[in-house]
Length: 172
Image (cartoon, rainbow, N blue to C red):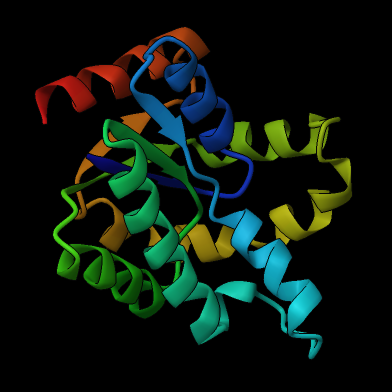
C-alpha cells in the first residue's frame, strides 16, 4: 500500500513516517519533496510552489508507482498536498497504475502547529514559509478530512502516532 501522510507544513509528517518505517522492515519512506528539489535544479523558472508544476505531479506519481513495483511492501509518502486539483491528479495517476492507496491526515490544532513551527531548529529556514502556509492548510482541511483517516496529533505522543500509522497499514 501507498499511504499518503498529509497535513500542514510542520505537522510532523516526515518524522511520523520515518519513525513508523523504522519499526517495519517492509515499509519505506518516499519523500515527494525530493522530486521538487530536483525540478528546481532542472527547471529554473521560479514558482512559489513546485507542486504547481505538471512535471512535479507526474514525476511524484510515477516515482511512487516505480518504488512500489520495485520494493513491494508499504510505502509512506509524507507530503502536504493542500491544493485539491493537484492532489487529485497525483492520486488518480497512482490509482491508474493499480497501486492501492490510503490517506491519513495528521491534524494539529493551530496554536500547537505554530509553536512547533516556531521552535523547529531542523528546518528553521522554512519557518516563515510554513507559518504563511497555515491558512492554506485551514482552507484545505475540510476536503482533506474526507480522504481517509484523521489523526489529531496536537497532544498525541510521537510513538503513538507512528504506531497508529502502522496499525492502519496492517488493516489495509
